[in-house]
Image 1 (cartoon, rainbow, N blue to C red):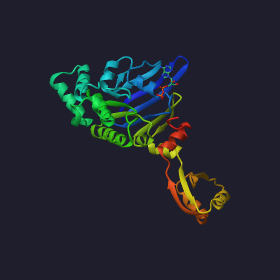
Image 2: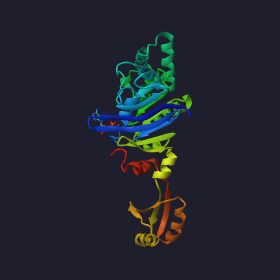
Image 3: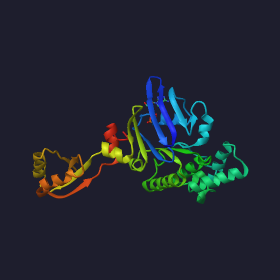
Image 4: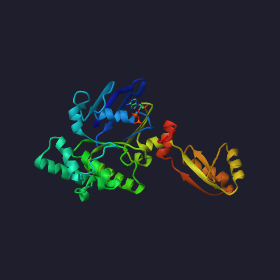
Length: 304
Ligand code: ADP
């Protein structure tokens, strides 16, 4: 397996606050990797360290083979970063913003022009390259941010909540651009997000809490382990339904006119339905989601 990021025993404290308490993980090359956790879990601290912005207290980090603390310039050349508050110059056009960034990498002439064109094409901003950044819509701005981060043809792209603050439709568009970019270029994407439906599409997920890894796995594995399926029953006779469930040793929770029973396994729904069919007018079985898994892992909603 090709590990593009390897983190061992990473620690960082701010005074008495132990923000990161010994993280061990790796990211496989070419994958969409989601790094999740509730507020204050230590995500930003970890990402800032990986991006060479913040020095760790202890541990080892390698990015594409380069050792953090020894080869930071090489790491910076290997990564592209889009932070939420990374705004481009509003008065410059998208192209001028990207060119300025390319200049910082020491590019010039034809190479610079080529790099700008490539980044613009991959991030799908060619249509509005000549427009001032300040005049773009939220979704266009985010794509321009990504284009700028791609100008040095990075191996890893860090995206810190790339779709937060966008309306649902724009969010979907930006998310689709990110997915296409990762699929088509084989770029490794290191993502943080508050949207569990995005995390559900990642190849691999790590959940951190209180500076430690609370769970890791594919979305499918995490859902199977931490989220349960639900049987939602529409009662025709609610008291009789609850009594029939109780007689089977089951408890139902009343939610918005429905009675919800947690299932250990999806197929358990069949036997329950047989017992209660006289007291219901309908039912549905809902599979556990990444949201449920996140709550199962951390005991909290991601936004709490
Ligand atoms: P997240 O990104 O998951 O919300 P952070 O990495 O920002 O978490 O924070 C982890 C912990 O470290 C929190 O308890 C936070 O209050 C604390 N922390 C973060 N940055 C600083 C700082 N500059 N000074 C002091 N404490 C900080």
